[in-house]
Length: 108
Image 1 (tube, rainbow, N blue to C red):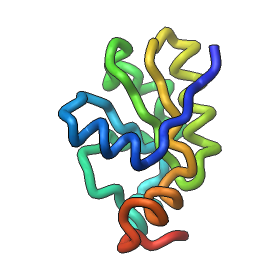
Image 2: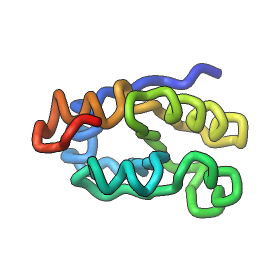
Image 3: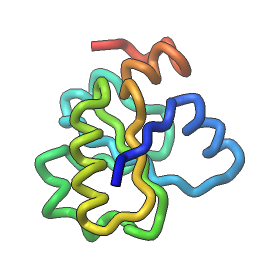
Image 4: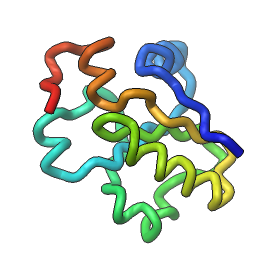
């Protein structure tokens, strides 16, 4: 199975239409403090995801975000291997979010 990408704009548009998507932020605490996503998010640092799978619903669409898209892609692939059916990688991560959605978010 191949993880699908979703752009920040598509994610925001789907949320605005009322779609129930989980946004899983796998960045470290210090990264969240530098550049937080201004929307409902579940924060589980990348290294903690395997031990905290019960906090995620495998039947719900899950979008994974990190700084630029690399770590989130790894975690999205991991979630697919664990049986999660609808997993997306937020293309470009928080850097794309800052560029395309909210320039008040400081790139780092």
